Amino acid sequence: MTELPIDENTPRILIVEDEPKLGQLLIDYLRAASYAPTLINHGDKVLPYVRQTPPDLILLDLMLPGTDGLTLCREIRRFSDIPIVMVTAKIEEIDRLLGLEIGADDYICKPYSPREVVARVKTILRRCKPQRDLQPQDAESPVMIAESRCQASGCGRALDVAAADF
Image 1 (cartoon, rainbow, N blue to C red):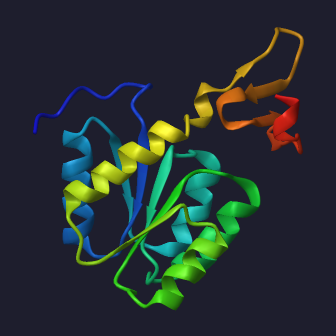
Image 2: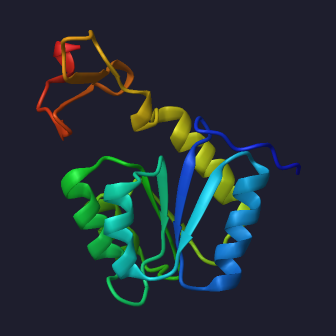
């Protein structure tokens, strides 16, 4: 794997993982796959970061110091539709179902293959264009429209628009 230069168009991946070796492993594989990863190792630091610097996708561990992953997922879903992939040692069906019900887009159980994580990131990002791809429809309009995802926002807030309106 070769590392390519990272620019403002490189998809940003937030890794929320408290185990340093796993976090570094994901960073290495994501960089080699041309992503721009950032690692946060404490749950209490996640929400301020996501609000200030929204990533294109979040890899979220469930068991974290501070705020746990389920609470973070629930809180992020209140203000954002950023794709969230739970990456955790909790392998029971009830844990997976709860994570998906709360708002995770995918769930990967540890131990995992870092190549599989990168493949899932690629697949999810292919289906979900990054928020920064949203463009104003004209110079006078503060409304942003993402037709491929049937989403619209105005003044920084998601608008309730039916898919049929697109």
